[in-house]
Image 1 (cartoon, rainbow, N blue to C red):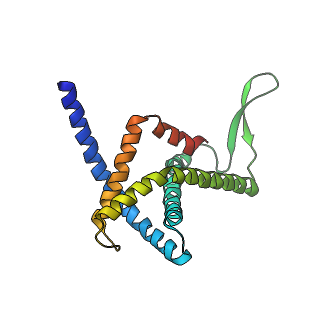
Image 2: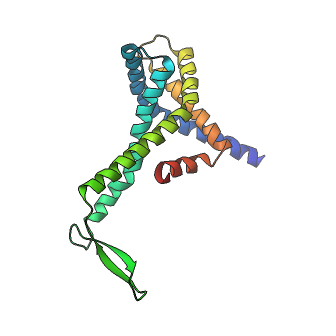
Image 3: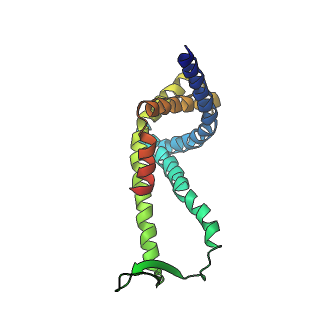
Amino acid sequence: MVDFAQTLVEFFVLLINLLLLAIPLAAIVFAFGRLEGRLEKKFKLSWIKASALSAFAAVFLAILIVYLLPFSGAMQFSSNDNLPTGITTQVVEDASGQLVEQQIPGSSLLDSLGVMLVTFLRLVFISAVLTVLLLPLILLASGVFSKFAKKKSANIPAFYLSSFAGLFMIAVIILALPWIPAGIAYFIFFS
């Protein structure tokens, strides 16, 4: 009996957290929902194409923020480094077999631009894959939105309920397949 009560309490805590998380998600959905409507009208795209493009834009921005967040924390530690500016070192093994620290020659601008281009293309690919994985959830949220929307213009409760429905399905999928968050994190940072 205690196990059932604990499970019930945890389920309600999950629902409350999803309700809270749906608030900022509804704002994001609202903003990118307007983008979807503009894409449909301006380029005469079908619903699915406009949804995929607006979802791609949202996912790309989210992935870019998540990917660049660790670098913002690392920047504060680089100013405390004991090395003079522009000098970086690496540990290598010399001819006698001992480990020594050697200065690395500075990389050229072309090398840095190449790394940035490859990283950008990688993030575009990751965003495209995650957008395709999110399309069924977008379809579900669109169905919930059309069920609760009173008019086609700004309908905040319908956006909120559709966001909550998508989050609830994500929670169900993650509870059924708990390896998904670790797989997505690995896909974003190490693929």
